[in-house]
Length: 93
Image (cartoon, rainbow, N blue to C red; front, side, top):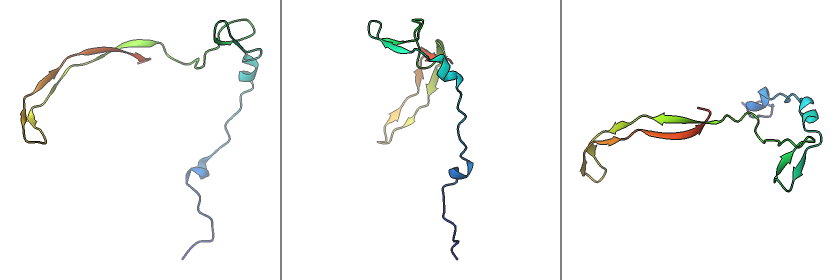
């Protein structure tokens, strides 16, 4: 037996309108592109950044580990390998 209702994706049941914040519009009044500096600036000449919540990069240490020994797919024996510790820069970790 088929129901007469049209089938919609489940996500449609939970969709809600996104709240609109007018304070964001007021914050960008007078914003324009400065050709000399090649970035967006506000009325005071301060740069506008695309992502104000971006976290500054930090140093992260990835610990060393040992890759186990074993047979490869072609049947060759590979001994265990030691992977050294690495340091890299990541955003806000």
